[in-house]
Amino acid sequence: MSEAPSFPGNAMQGSDTFEFLRQLVTVGPSPQQTQRMAQRSHSDIDWNQLQRSAEFHGVLPLAARNLIEHYPTLPAEVTKSFRSAYENNLRKNLRFSVELARIAAQFAGRRLRVVPFKGPLLAESVYRDLGLRSFSDLDLLISPRDFEAAKLTLAELGYRPSQEFSPAVERLVLRTGYERSFDGDAGKNLVELQWAAVPYFYAVDLDIDVMLARAGSSIVGGCEMSSLAPEDLLLMLCEHAAKHLWARLIWIADIAQTMRMQTIDYAQVAVRARALGILRMLGISFWLAKNLLQAELPDAAQELMAADSRVPSLGSGFAERVARGATYDFESTKYFRQILNLRERRRDRWRYGWRLVWTPSSADVAAVRLPEMLFPLYGFVRISRLARKLLLRADG
Image (cartoon, rainbow, N blue to C red):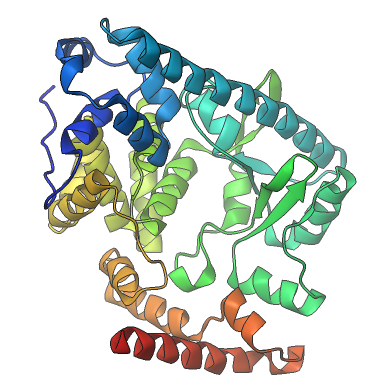
């Protein structure tokens, strides 16, 4: 396997650290990869910076395991710090795994269909080690029509919405949003009920009911529970990473590991992605997995990636920002333009632009209180607030 290229940023600080970090973001590294780790001199590594970068990218447990197992001259104090990071994550994830089993059993008792997404399920089924993936909440996919019943089921376990809405606003959120967070006795935002892949304005209308119907099963913490079909899991992970513009390595690692560990029908993936207009999002995801994390892609994934001539240039831009640890302002026009560039079809770009302008956000609803019969006017509230933001940015 050829070594992945480097992505130097403009005046990028810590680029050597990032180059080393991305070598560590793999499960079961190849002999060539372990050899490169072993040959790295520890005298030119800023271990504190490496740990901070790994934590920012959400890959600290994975980097820690690889360092401890494959880096023979790791200083004792560094070994202790990274081992502690892995073990702390494992203990936290074990608690989440137990809680997920409790929630899944409660939903099963109420005969409600729920499919865990990411979290413990991804850690065990894709990383094959509960301690290797970092997460801080439990994501649960449900049918939108089951939201109220799911909310009551969580309440029976002591969970309450992180933000209280009136029934009318909650109905609006169900139409235009995609998730609701819930607090528990152990902390805030511990559980997220998701009835869509992304908010409505992104114009990617994945049918969650169909995905739930295709779901299989997996074992988490010794308990059997529903899990997405591999093709649907890959689509969801690519869409989730694209929504965040692939800003952290963990989202790319999830995709790379899923492709490596799951048996995937790429013809079906292509059919579903083409229908949704997100082939470019998949192509960029595959490009980043290959070029940033040295993932070996199957021929079918390579063909899908090569079908769009814009994938390499767009992928290079995102890779450079990942290397710099750059973040995005998700309310900026620059972010919205980036999302537009990810859609290969003109009609999907128009749908995204139209929905972006007219679909009210929770901030729009909070800014102006309207009775439910006047909710259609929130589109004008949205336009007014967007225009004000643009004028303020222009003045600034």
